[in-house]
Image (cartoon, rainbow, N blue to C red; front, top):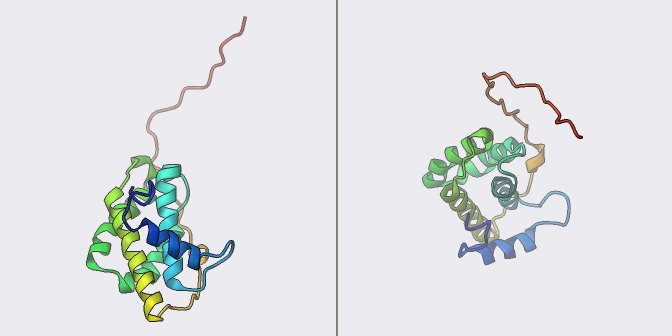
Length: 151
């Protein structure tokens, strides 16, 4: 939650990297920057929309492009975020996981930028496949709506 409410110590770094790498529209130029976009989408959807949007494409991007360089700690937090995003009816807010994952992605991007080892982008977040969320069946039959009579 610290990145969302801007109390995370790395917030200034995130803002500087966002300004440097995110175009006004369209894809970024680098895999590491696109990972930041994917993670930002997850954080935004969690706190602004209560996981109301389909986020499987952002998860798929991180699995494909960040997992090869991810730390064990990132991989430990990832299932909490994936479960929350893919099971929105649980109303989970994995604050620690979201913050840790964004911090790691920012660190990877900043170091790659500093070393000149950024990876050219091959596909963007929105190129990734969507996986439909399967909501559980409600066992209760819904009562038909009744309108109150207006006198």
